[in-house]
Image 1 (cartoon, rainbow, N blue to C red):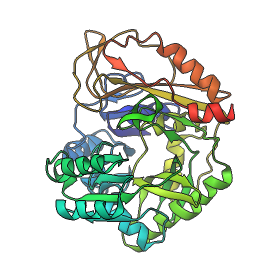
Image 2 (cartoon, helix red, strand yellow):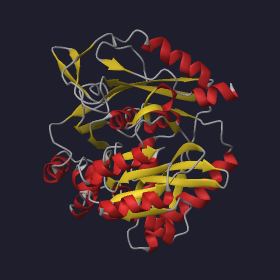
Image 3 (cartoon, helix red, strand yellow):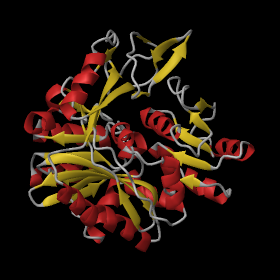
Length: 418
């Protein structure tokens, strides 16, 4: 098989690395890919937004399977376009991907299908938003309705924080069209869990769970980011907890999308708050999480290409998972998720099998920063504690003149269970 991966971040590097292990895959292309992926994929100079160019490439190079990594092309209908061109593609149509593309749609969808989630209020009017805030008080969660690269969410613990977040979305136009509406959500108490599944219509095959670290700094301080690290498994939660999340959340979501005429094929991601009442949905994503993919896929012992092809042909592939733990830490450009400099030198990059690049470019054999999250280093070991020690032992050699990373990834699990 020839495989084309659309995207160029850490998630796509991880997908390419996993496909490279497949006995059925002979060549992997990434569009546009990144400079750190060259050992496992051939990067091609076609943007992920250039649907016509990608379809032409897929046809001319006889691509057998295209996998879409990021959310933006999904919402722009790339799967629809590939399907219309008669090409095999793995990912949801734009109609199904709306479960990620619009938080207001996702919330109303969950209420229609009795999927557990917090109460919410949607408006495009600033005064209405402030009025709802006055009625509900803080803490409260403020979200831009559309795609904002993981940065359109504010967990406001005071009313003044909430007012600032609403103003940034509706008055300051911080997120452009993604902020045409604001969603004010009930603050849920508990611990977060990321649970992904391979989905084809009503077939739902869950993966092992992971936990992401959204805040920029140690102790869950600082602004929300796209994710600063992750680990799997999550010993805080039992298999019964995971099974309940599949039964109460993932399966009803897949069934509900079928009933509404927008069947989902691809990776369905549920960001959950595990509350005293059980799992409650914080958000749905229509693709692999990043950085969750970087710690979940290394635990998958099954052939990824075979899993996807079997799923697309209405089979129900069995997934085999390693019992070992994987913990990964993101190194980001200083200033992220706010303004940061590009083109900064990245030196003393550690050697590791689970080293996944994201925002990088190469100049004269030297890596330079080209995005906010630059790389993720992960380690696989018999325990989360051992994996964490191995990761940070290697990261201490990384030159952090232009980078930073959290030093407490996985601590919630390790301090309580190991």
